[in-house]
Image (tube, rainbow, N blue to C red):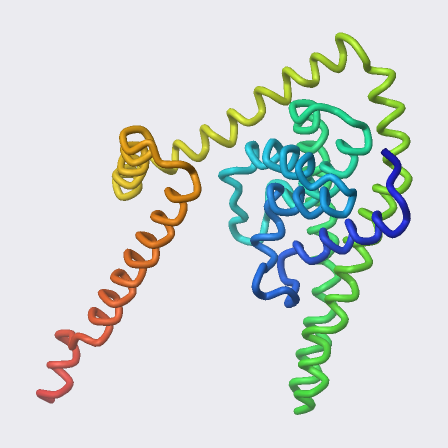
Length: 267
């Protein structure tokens, strides 16, 4: 499959919209577009095969299923793995297992883009501080939104677009050279990598407060013989009710008078 210039630019735009900190597409949000399952589907639509894009994106999602960015230091970039990884895998025509082996190192390269993004943004922070000292809030707001997004677009969308356009042929040639045992080895490795994400997810599920929900979902899936969609809808309703109750409980606790309040009133 050949990736055209327009398709490469659109894929680069998808990656840019999935970068943390982008204020556009608020209904989807960077946290959703960053998921390989979502970005893979969109890349598949751009390349004219949404089904294959969703299949490859779902496969790439597995190693990143328990991904978390703590303290602004992401260990990898699932957004880059989902966009560029899916595009190159579809261009090369490889199986989902081999696509995983290709996408994981691509995701590691995404940390370079993130570090570069944060490093450049430091300069804008100092400019915002200076504008605030001058009392020019319009300038501060402008510096807070526009220059960082231009920088994110240049260091995010442009490399991905170039990688899709020029890298598709290179990857295809490499895959053709690896036909046989080397490619089979990559597929085996790709089949093992999802176990990492699943293991991390199971580790989180094993906590007492979460394990009961997992058991409930297992019972609903196995003994009620429901399909994935109704289970997802039920889970969404339960999650909404549960979080709403938790929020109301926290509000009541915050509004309740403390011993210090009684002491102050007495004084």
